[in-house]
Length: 416
Image 1 (cartoon, helix red, strand yellow):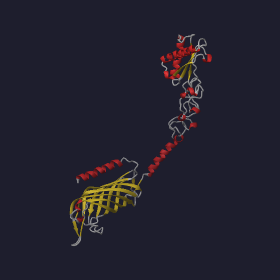
Image 2 (cartoon, rainbow, N blue to C red):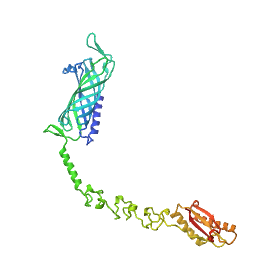
Image 3 (cartoon, helix red, strand yellow):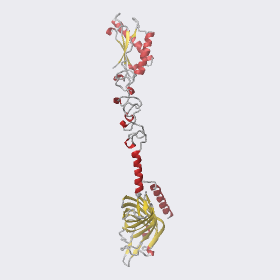
Image 4 (cartoon, rainbow, N blue to C red):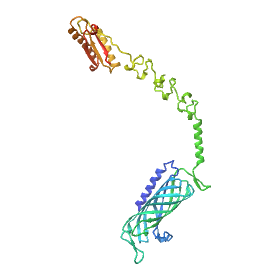
């Protein structure tokens, strides 16, 4: 029994801690705790033996707990649990462990009044171990018995809440419980009476003059008006535009942009400007195009040089030709300086481009010899570029001989 009482107290403490933190519940949740009295003599006539003391088994400890949630003003759904040791004089049973678990609805007649009556109807589970192997003698020829200890029941009754303050009061209720048992018919039915305390979780106020529990609407309306007036007339950023009309109420802004700022004065408000700190163009969402090549600076690899889109904003690159002495393919000091500059451009400015290295020769000498010589000249430039860090996979070497009559040189062109 001590364990049962501890369980009920712990369960109540849990629900109290949870629902007490729900500030906006508005009287939706109720918890009832108390003691119950069981009357086992409502045979066929529900009120038979109702007031006889010997027919009632009162459990003075906390033996009943109920949780309720109001789904509408007049309707609440409840979950009830009752435990205790009871006597059943009809079946001559003492200290029988009694369990009843039920759920149903409460219908409130005058919700929010200090005297708060209600009707209830529900059903659930009932357990009693001491009916097994017992017989109830009604007459010499009539005996009733049952070999079950678990039963389904329906219950209905009346209740009353007496609210002492807005969220605390006294509760009394009585329910008639019809137990379904084929072999014993109505002889397991019982009355269950409860008396205890009720707790309501929400923000209400009792009007003692009218004996009715009401919400403090006047104070609430006053607070709402104050908030509305504050919102109506407040200008948080002091830009001359009221907060209710200000798209950027915490930033000093311009009237033409509904209170939002334009830091770079490019006629594009900051919240629509991709470059809010740089004067820019509307077609580029507020970003600049310094070289006017129709490529915004943040996408332009050469923002200060007019360039082409295919070159990512950079101008076409034309490499200086590398010249050779007649009949030779060795590189001069001047040629190495040119190659060094070309390598830097290849690596830093156009790292993803690929190239042709075309070698040429003058018309002196045999055609076959000039073809080989032009290839060697192109290859010597290739090795020089690779030594400077250019990836060899980006370069294709070609010996073109005396084609195009370009003379003793090597040309580097970008592959399209």
